[in-house]
Amino acid sequence: MSNGMVLPRGKVTACVKAKYVHKDKLFDGSTEKKGNYNGKYDRVNMLYQMTAKAGIFDNFEARIMVPFWDKQVKRKAGITPKHVDTDNLSGLGDVVIMGRYALMSQRKGDWMNLAIGAGLKLPTGDADHKNPLPFSKTHKYMGPGGQLGTGSWDPKFELGATRFMGRSRVDAHFMYTIPGDGAHGSRKGNQFLYNLGYGYALNKYFDLELELNGVAQESHRYDHASTVNTGGHTIFLTPGVHWKITDKCHLSLGVPLVMYRNLNGEPGTPERLGKFGLGEEFQVVTRLGFSF
Image (tube, rainbow, N blue to C red):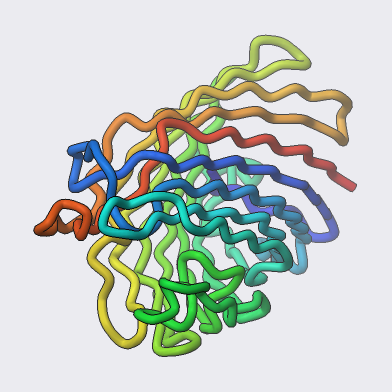
C-alpha cells in the first residue's frame, strides 16, 4: 500500500516491485463453482513494476510507475469443456504519472502526515492482442483485463495519511481510477482501492506490518457491452516484513490473503455456459527500495 508521506524537495527514491497472482478458482459472488465451464479457468499474472519519486517543490512530489507484465490465461471450450488454448502475453504495460501534495507533515510539527494526489494512466501498453479460435468468433480481441494495456487515458485520484508514534506507524490510503474509452470498444470498470496498515519497528533492521487491503472493481466493457464475469469486491489481510539492509536500501515481503470476495458471475443453462469470475487465495509481493 501507499501512505501519506511526501518527499522533501531534492530527495529521490526508487523501487522495484514484483507481484505474483495465480487465479485458478471460479466464483459466482462468494460461491465457488465446481465443474467445467467454457472460457477462462486459470490465469497467472506476474508484474514487475519500477517506480521513481522525486521531491520537486516544498510539499510536492512527482512519481512515475512503469509496469512490465508476464500474463498467461488458459481456456476451455466444447460441449464437454476441455482445455483448448493457453495464451501468453508479456511486455510493457500502461505507465502511470502522478503528483502528490502534502497538506500536513509531522516533520513540520503537524500531528500527522496527510497528502492528496492526482495523476494519469497512459496508454503505453499493447491493447491489440487477438483471441484465437474458437473464442475469436465471439470477440476478435481479448478483453481489457487481459491485454498488456487498455488503450485508454485514465485519471487517478488519491488520499493518503500516515502517523508515526514511537516504534509504531499507522497508514491509510485511498485511490480511485476512472478509466476512459479504450481500444476496440472496451473500457475497464471504475476501481476503488482502500488500505489501512499498522507497522511496528522490532529493531534498527526489521519492521513487521499488518494491512487490510480492499479492491472494489466495476465490470469491464467488452465490444461495447458489459461483461458479466469481470469485477467484484475483494478484501485481503496482508502480513508483511521490512528489512532495512542499509540506511538507503530496504527489502519488503508481503503475502495478501483473501478474507472476503464477491465476484461477478452469471449461471448458465446448460451449466457449461455459465460465466464466472476468476479468483485467487493469496498473492506474493516483494519490493526492493532505494533512496538517494
